[in-house]
Length: 404
Image 1 (tube, rainbow, N blue to C red):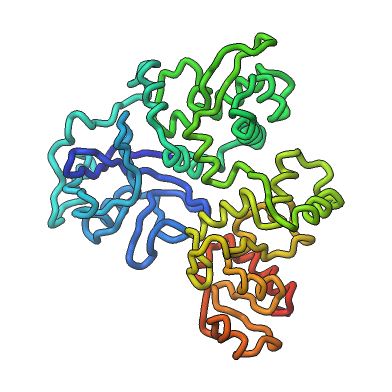
Image 2 (cartoon, helix red, strand yellow):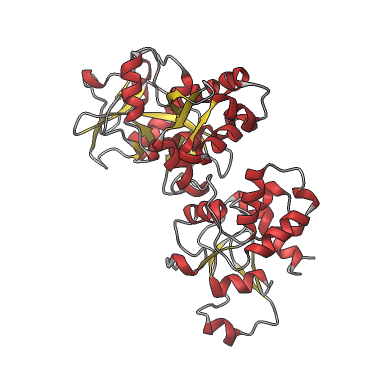
């Protein structure tokens, strides 16, 4: 995340919201995230992204576009979202003097000053260590979710393995030597360095500085164990964020579990994977665990085709055949669709498929009367399709004869 101090929105309760440049996970775009009538919301692959602040300001001020912005001070009322002028209690905006020309002729002119108590600090040293820890304690799961989504592309595989393994440990507590083993590092010193770098990414995202140890952004230091090693416990808000993101695998309760275990165990692609990845693959094979959780979140808990929101009947499918997919593709929530059970059976068996724009394709062997029985017809379409869905939908079409 790259925040810009030259433009700010001000709410009726004098909160100051600063726009920031961020990556969009679905498309890989980076910039100020703008919601427009033409491009829609920046969620799920939509929106308009630009690195030009002046263009972003013109869109907000003259055309009423929404812009992704956030507060940054130590507050229980931290805000982060898409905001528009005269919407969501936004009463005005402020521009740095060098950008005043952008608002010439606007019906709403910029405020002369920002509320003094909300002025953005000019360095990241504005918090002493005790205050920094208080600020960390006030963060919630939603804060860590926003941080993960913005930072995920910058997290090294070893750092990721350490964090996820640490969060999945009993009581979410491990020594740094054990954390080092999760990341494949020789000893705790290397783990301290890498975990510290990861912690600093999160601390910088939250604009929290002056930490004695950057790992404190991820975990809380506890007493020594019987071997004299300090114990670290992952922050509860971070654990909950990882759980909501589907990054922490749960035990699978499914009649297909034994078949999934046998298939993964006999698959040459799975022979050298870690235990964490092995468990994730087993869960993904039966559409459970983190794979299902991430897909539920991606589709907002509704069927991708019918918008059915009865969670117990929704199935997390795979589009690219399991045997043809890499392990990474098998765990990718975009490799499949969240579908009501009856529709999933049609999709899984290849009786229906979908084009890159989401239009339904129907096998000649599936009669219109059968479709109607399920509440479907030849005009229904997926609610949306992200760019990351398209290669998997293409693979599904090829596997079931919908493409030459």
